[in-house]
Length: 153
Image 1 (cartoon, rainbow, N blue to C red):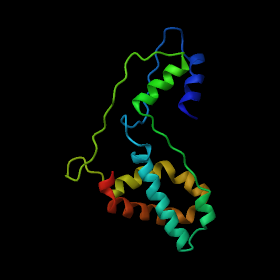
Image 2 (image 1 turned 180 degrees about the horizontal axis):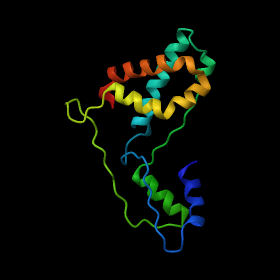
Image 3 (image 1 turned 45 degrees about the vertical axis):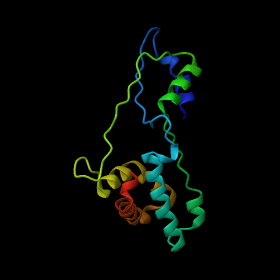
């Protein structure tokens, strides 16, 4: 479901004069959508899956048919979607900024933490598409690639 459909369904749920708070993952204005953390995570998983296909562990057709769509709105895009909807007005819009980990020891995310988070959210859909056998080796591959490519995050 996109933001348009989400907003279209809300007027029936909100009383006249009521407020709705939206907390949505987003990207800064002007940031290309391929440069957000979710896209980068999916690229790493995709890279692991392609490695496995080249090794004959899974079929390339299975990899090609595995598609996960994500889209993170910028503040400008969210504002435009709300205005196009016409049922709501924006009272306040704030960036709930999450500090980006640096290469210093403060707030550093390691591959194991990132892998645990990704596995918690994606294991079910990956298991359904590729089977259970691949899970441990896939997430181990992801962890290694994350650690190797951390500077991109």
